[in-house]
Image (cartoon, rainbow, N blue to C red; front, side, top):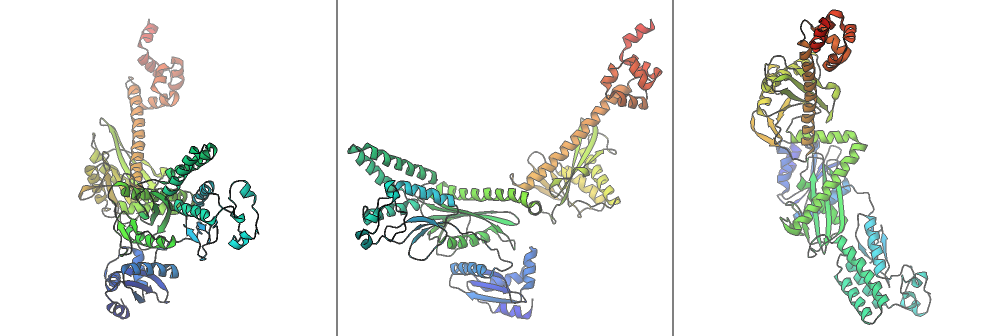
Length: 603
């Protein structure tokens, strides 16, 4: 660290604020917030950073600028605004090039309600933004079915209406408008409808439901059953919409819910806005990590940005873990009940979004998909390098017969079948799994070293601590211990064992790392069992033919080539046998399988 930087750090205040790092070209490369500016900035230069990008960032810092603020909340907001303004190279940036739809209640006499993507500061009310146009259209259709509103853009001032400037249009005759342009609907009646519509948009249905129920009963009492039926249809539509949108306790009102899940390279954050037990907004996004940011850091950034973007004034938020947002908003971390269920729902939305992204990436950008899986396996299996080349070993023997072993090879997380290898166990007598494992691992890597072939980054042995120790011995004999990572996977509980560590690692049952590891182990087992069965079958055939007196190996080979199996040899005629192996040997084989006929021929 240069003397100039050291001096800049020493003079930083111990107060909340925002810091900016500049490179040699005087370009902002990173913006951060801190409760204590001096401590936070100093930590960049005193800590040993595991993340490579962080080390590069620190190397490139030439100048530090800071802005002191009053509270942590102010620091969050300022940091977010500076990131959006300068787009620093090493900052996570929540990109958003969409123009979201809003519901507008126009500021005018007899207000119109319509969908728009432009927010104009003219005093009109805007609800949103919504992340789905479909949601807005469904809501608009419901409003139009319940309340007859005007759709024309006339200036319905009292003077123009009194002067009879306008005439009702087709919408009036169709019953979609009550004709305020001719003074057929009062402003008070229209404003009451707007008030009820405003409540429906906010998720509060009680007032409208009560009003329609009363109207229906009044019509019914006055024997106006046709009108009562129309009101009943409106009630049904409103109840149906409410049932679809209400997912939790209606007492949960005006709350923002945030959650995040992440992997090695990306975070996936979800936002739900709750009003009277209804989800009235939802938004999920992918956040690319820049400096190995924690879930807490990413979620804080997401919360500040989303509340700004969607202009949320909710006084309370629900989150899965503690976040630092200052005193402006109440932060709740639900542990059970309806509140916990809504956070779980938010997390489920984030997980489904992540799965969709993976599927799309797998099709569109397979390289990125592979990089992500390799990075995740490196992290989950505690490796020093990505396991681009993995080899897995499995032993097969049944009751000690025909011991064999299999080696399967995965490259970039996929089987490389041309590199699979079978092994007949040579140096071990009987069913000795540990000895067999040591032999086959030794033979495999002795051969690769001799042929100067690339070695794997990871070896997996099928079995627990015993098989792992055997594989480790083989690597030690070859001088490869410590140069190739080796682990054992036990079958029963999927325990992962490491050299010198008696306590196994348990991977998340749903993790891709475990799925690939299991796939490797199962593929090795399948490949080994197939070879073992073939060998036993061949052995059984040969052992039967070998029992024929005075018949050698060459004759047996010729018979199998001709007749394909011992059964067909047994069923073959004497003439067919003679054609294959000659008269003398054919007589011996035929006599072995048909002793009775041979005696009859002798008589």
